[in-house]
Amino acid sequence: MVNVLIIDPSYIVASGLASLLNQLKEVHQVKITDNGIDCLHIIQQLEADIIFINTAVLTSEQYNEFKQLISKDILVSYLLYSALPDDVSGNQFSIVQSKASMVDKLQEMVLEVTKNKSEEDQTEELSPREKSILKCVALGLTNKEIGEREYISTHTVISHRKNITRKLGIKTVSGLTVYAIINNIIQMNDIK
Image (cartoon, rainbow, N blue to C red; front, side):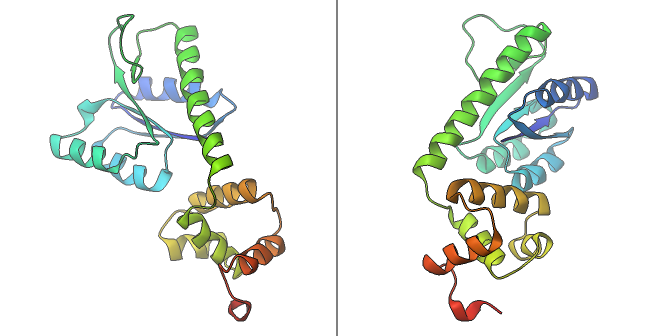
C-alpha cells in the first residue's frame, strides 16, 4: 500500500489530486498540507512513498530541511501550474492536463512505488524499526503503547504491523511472539 503526501497552497488543486489518488486501489492514505512547517512534521510521521510538492510553500531553509528528510525510496513529484513539454523529466506533474492524462500518470507513479516496495519485501528481512515494533507486539503492548514508546502515530504502528505480517506470513500475535523468540528478538523471560 502506498502513502501519499500533497504539499500545495491551493485547496482546489490538492483536493482534486487527492480525489484522483484515492480512486487508485494501491493508495492507502493521502495527507494534504498547505505549508512548509506542517509538511516537515507530516513527512516524519506519515512515512510517505510519494510526495507531490509545490515548492512555493517552502522557504529556502525549509526546502533544505525537506531535502534532508527525503530518502531515496520516496518518489518526489514537483507540482507545476503549467503544461509540461513532451521531453520533461518524470518527477514533475502538471495540473494543466486532462483527467485521463493525470490518472494515467498517477497510476504509473503508484505502480512504480508498489513494484519497488514489492521487490524490497521479497529481498529484505525485517527492518530495525519493524523488529522493534515486533518486539513490542510480542511483549503484549497495544498499538497506542507502541506508538508512545516508539514516538510514532498509532496509524504508523498499524502500517508497520501490516508490513511485518506480510513479510513473515504470520497473522497472529502468538505466532509473531514465537517468531520473535526463535529469532532472538525477545527472550522467554521477557514475556510477562
